[in-house]
Length: 251
Ligand code: FES
Image 1 (cartoon, helix red, strand yellow):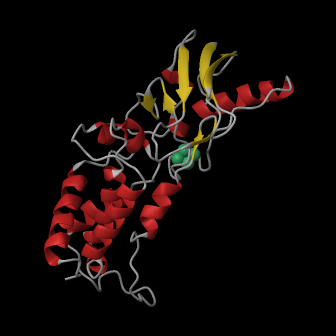
Image 2 (tube, rainbow, N blue to C red; image 1 turned 60 degrees about the vertical axis):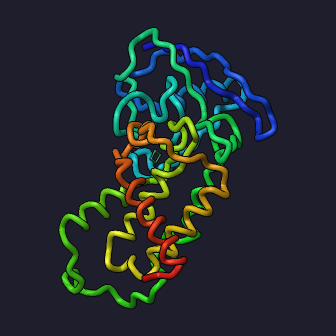
Image 3 (cartoon, protein in one colour; image 1 turned 90 degrees about the horizontal axis):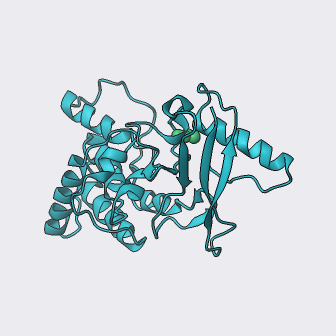
C-alpha cells in the first residue's frame, strides 16, 4: 500500500518543530507500524536526509518506550495496544497518517517523536518499591494473599509506564500511572509497611513534575495499552486521604 505521512520533525528541545510530509511506498500490510517507519528511514538515509527519531526497544508491548500519537490518539485508535503492536493492515491504501510525539509539559520533546519521560522515573524513585529486607525468595504460599487482591495488584502491575495516559489526558495528568504504581504495592502484604508514606511521596513528586490533576475525563484508561482502570485513581486518592489523616505515619 502507498501512504502519505505527516511526521512531526523537531531537531531538539529548543526547536519549534513542524510537520513534514513523506510518501511511504509499497508498504506490506504485514509490516508493523515501526517497520514502516524503519523503511521510510532507510530511504531518508539513502537520500542523505536525517532519519526520523523514535523510541523503541522490545517491539512487543512490554517496555513502554515506543509511545507516539497516531492520527490524534496515543498509540493509535486501536484499543489496548502499543504503537509497536500496531500493524499496517489497520490502514488502507492511500491513507494519510499524522504522527507526532506525546504532548505534555512534563514530557519535553527531545527530538522528533522522542520525549523525555524521566519524570516517571523520579516518581518511582520516591517510593515505587519495597525497601524492607526480603532475604531469599520464600515459599509462594508462605504469605497468603486473597485472590481478589492478588488479581487487582497484578492488573495494576501491568502498567508499562509508556505515558499514553498523560498524552491522552486534557490536563496531562499522570494519576493513572502513579495510582497503578502505588496500588500494585499497596494491595499486597509486602507493600503495607510503607503504604502511606509511599503514596504521599509519589503524589508530591507527581505534582512537582508539572503533571495536571485528574478531572475524571477517563481518557487515560481508554488510551492505556494495558486497559488499566481509573478505579486505581480512586484507590490512590483514598490512600492519600488516609495518609493525611495519619499525619504521614505508616500504620
Ligand atoms: S517498543 Fe516496547 S512497548 Fe513498544
